Image (cartoon, rainbow, N blue to C red; front, side, top):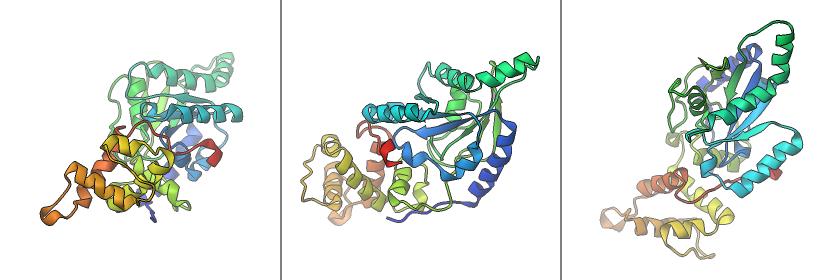
Length: 283
């Protein structure tokens, strides 16, 4: 399936980030742990530049830890600072603040030698719905910025100052102008980085079934208590799920809309198991 979504406000957001990064000391780059590779935005290269950067693998409670370990090994091999968190869980704030402290230690030491004591400023970037605002709220210990389980909640930049003196800049989730890889685009849809309203949910559900059958062969059969035969197509399995869940309209026709939403919701809520779609070897 072909997916393209780059609304005008994202162009404005990228320009804002490129201007704002000049005023910050470090970058927090948030990646959804269910699809870290898909979350790498090529447009962010100019934003990060040479700034100290920590990669924040978020939503780890929903991710496949065996694959996540490979991502951690990748960051260690490349020398890129990283931290694994579930921003909605307790006792996560110290992990993130410690990571920011580590990447800005040299700067703070230089400032201290000069007798300069000022807040360390960090910009938080990532694709839509990766959890940037939730991370800021986690660090602040309160609802400092608006969050939501859908893309496009953060409309503009928001500064939040923490008691530690750290200042965080929340930014709108931003994609890139054109997807060259249909699989990457689909995975961004799976994790909610692209609005459901701009895609065909039936086609998206079929693509999710296809990718899960390849990567996690048992998850669909175990969730829906059905048998998935190798000879069956994604459409065949979708129809069986619909009948099993009772998504049938008058006349016996399958309610593709309700079934599609149910399958996608099951994935997003972790009911299909702990899943990570990509590996660093695919970068």
